[in-house]
Image (cartoon, rainbow, N blue to C red; front, side, top):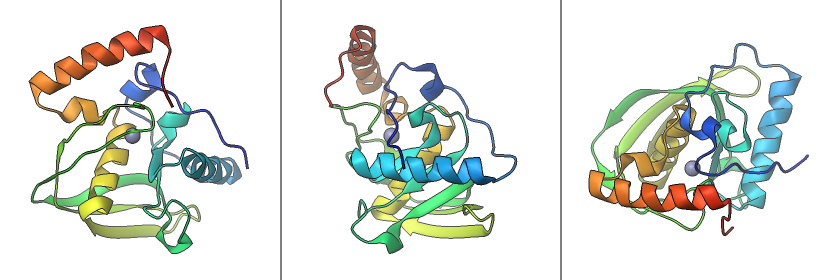
Length: 172
Ligand SMILES: [Zn+2]
């Protein structure tokens, strides 16, 4: 399965709302497998389809980065059923390499979506997994962790990132 290039901050697909998947066919299943391979190769614990330039509402997450396949989550058209509480931790992003920030996230989330076979899946998560769901669902809504920082930190980081995006010179 091919590993696809990860698009970086400033690419329009990262800053737009992605479209729902209308039907899960072989093409979508292949795309999901490419997303998993790309996430593992990066390596990362989550990836959303727009990060490989595809504006569709699909996310993959694996906190074990492939070490424990039972932790692999593949969700089509994910949406929040519930969000409660607050937590705040450092986050990074494969599309914003070399930078980080600490956005406020819900402490506990329940997410529903479809698996690659089209079955309804409902997941409740806390701690890192809750943050990963929020981070990846933000991607399909055109938001990056940068957009969720306090105004001062956000503006400072955005200025740096715009410069970096212009130069096209990302440190991976
Ligand atoms: Zn990200």
